[in-house]
Length: 74
Image (cartoon, rainbow, N blue to C red; front, top):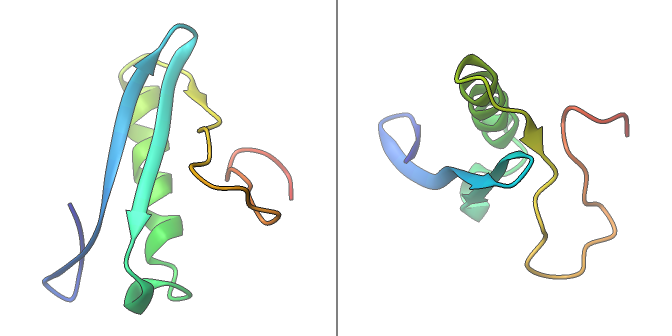
């Protein structure tokens, strides 16, 4: 769960894939644009690396022109 001000605003996951782990999050609209998603992804990347895995670019569920991952340059 992703919490903001004691309210559940989303969810995150680490999913094993053949060459590391895939990081994915879902974030409710009210939490967007506040840095909550970025903070959640940063924590998931740290958790993946601490566990000895390499974070991998997730597969988007819908076409997105603004899709990026925080460990790659924009």
